Length: 471
Image 1 (cartoon, rainbow, N blue to C red):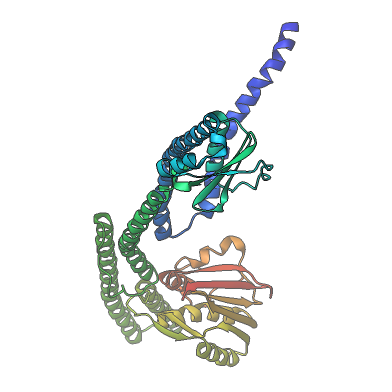
Image 2: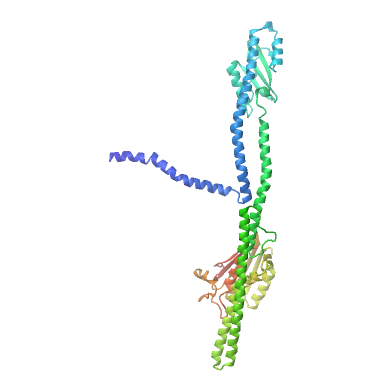
């Protein structure tokens, strides 16, 4: 027991902390990438620019910081060593050959041979140290070399004149003042490399940006064509597969897919049209035989009603299968349609109120969209006494909300009503002439526009239908 108690703190100490840290690393890594993805641009063009620019900036930063910093510091140190060595030689000549205070030859030699301007000043105190510049590599290197080679009180000024460095050194009974050109003690040609590096980068970016734009434009065109197809609109006239090989393959695959879908729709519509023609002929023959045949009037009326129902169901199915897919997109006036709907509501003695926000002109397939609104709004006017319709058109989308005070639809059956030929036994039951295709056709039209229909609870106590389509 004692051994176990002694081992537990060790197991629950450092080892447990390491284990928790290892387990937390994947979560921290995921959070980091989620944060990066949140702040990253969402468009492909911006991300491509980052992919090109970021490595270039990183590479140049490493080169400038590592190579240039070392090269700059090394060259500056060598130049400062040579300059301080010349100053130390002048001091040795002054102290070795005093010449009774005549230092003209030393001044001449320093100026002619060493390119240094030398003055001997009275033994006044050295000036107070001035503020160091932000980038003080010359001050640090020059001060270090003077301390190492001369080891006397000194004062330097690298700020006063940008091209001249002033050095004062305290000697016995005098002060030596030396003016040195900055280029003698400092590697001042490094900026040329930086200018070349930045200039080359700008030239590369000038070439890369248009190239990236040309590569991304075919992708945007393909996305626009796919979006138009999803909204039931014709393909843009200037669309053609171009760009990189992968993008061209995607463009050709999209065109072939669109052609196959359109061909399938045309074949389905043609087949159903032929079937409907044949069935109408048979139904007409049934009606004629019933009219000529004898029998009870009640039986004949019931059979005629069945035939009428079959014909109504057939027409509804044909309309549902066709889906108004062949209609071209155009302009639809919501305000005019709401006025027409208000007249219809007054004929059926229903209370209807409409609210329109935004542009009343909507770019959709006009006949199909009118049928969509008629099916949904007509369903509300059939089962409710008060109907409120609001439309909000803006930011590339249209949202139409239809509220009523009717019996509503139970939540568990709201998806079932969009299925073809579904009849509800309660609440909003279909009338005798209904076929169960109204909402199915409405949702089919909405989805062919790239939108959808959702059913919710209405504040009026009945059902709310929300129609959302891009417009």
